[in-house]
Length: 418
Image 1 (cartoon, rainbow, N blue to C red):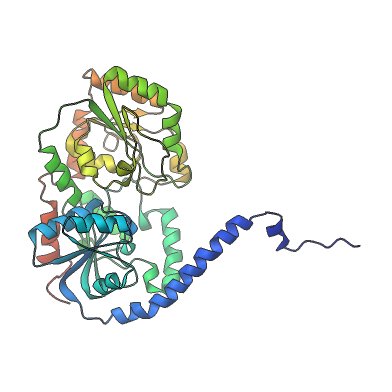
Image 2 (spheres, one colour):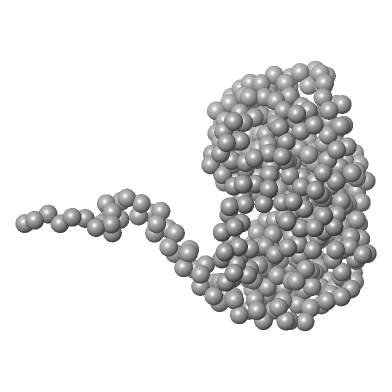
């Protein structure tokens, strides 16, 4: 019997790529059907009458109750009863948390969530329209963003820009597939304002220097008396698209040495991963805090105010930490690989303006520098002060107020009209 030549489909039976292809088919079909179903709803809500005092808030694709949107939401709820503020989420845990505080919250995909979004005049987000309900997002969107951009973002990044071009092609048929132009974007300095205007392709007048709402919470925490106890170190690496487990892997490889150092110096190490990072799969130890609460970033300002020293890499979190005037060190174990395969930076890494602290290549270097700092050798105080003045115009816990004034007093978002 003649041997039959295998056709391409036979590769699936032989295990060549079947898992990757088949895994993508199901979600793709579901997403396509969801888009088709929501398209008429999107069109209908373009003409739905809006309530100018109804605002919806959301953060991190609706997964968490955190970041700038959270602290601005709480400010509006506490100080502006004339505004009906509603948090939108797709997490039952977040729904329960917000409602337990007495504030309003709806599931973004529920009928009630759709209705609130269809009636609201303004959405306040930290990453984009998917923080709330992308299909019926209000006509005005305020983006508070989620950190001063050390890494190039949106259209400023050649890697991200390619993805945005593809999204815009799909958006010709499904307008909600990409983020619309923002009417207002909050920033912390003149430098950041210029970067955000470029990255989001908006007029410079749409970006206002207000300060980040979450830093109000940080400054308020810093003003409180601290509980005495061990010296605390926070390790907060950024997210990596390719080597997603890298920071946890090198932590695990050096864990014995790190724990020995913690014991000798009577310190604690708190680990906080990026919200998009996978579960670290590690449990807490007597001097190591590594749990889901810190990994979600749900109350990051309180955590930053409670630690004595920050270890990070390319995360812009340290730019907020500058407000504490406490030591910072940088663990750049994969610098060349990161710059080549992950993200481009706005600055040259190593510039004292950008890295006001020692740059370490290994955890051994980190331990050595921590030991020196514990002995009083802090030679970067002047660099931190210079960086703080460059990246932060304000340090007075009035950022939420300035965002509100930008929205309501001649700012880019007019809350008094349709």
